[in-house]
Image (tube, rainbow, N blue to C red; front, side, top):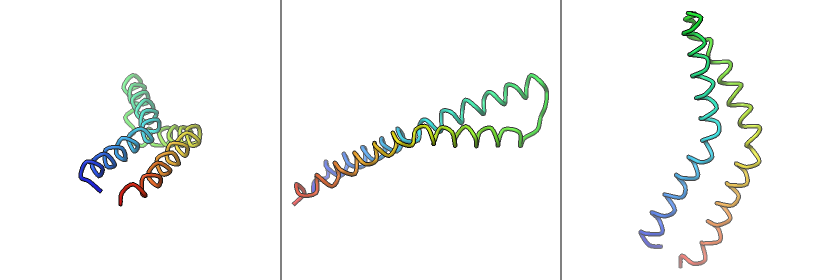
Length: 88
């Protein structure tokens, strides 16, 4: 096990985390900005108004992207387990 291998593994794990979380974060961001613009236009300053639409958007994104997320995680784990014999 070399330092280069550990750094590559850490980089790949962080990159995978960012890629997997991106759909939920992007849809939550779009929903939050849309609700904020709507609040600014209508001058409704209710702070709790954004929570339910954001939660629903993230839940729907999770349901839609869950097979893709699982596929990416299984691929990463399979590659990680496959590299174990080469470490010794």
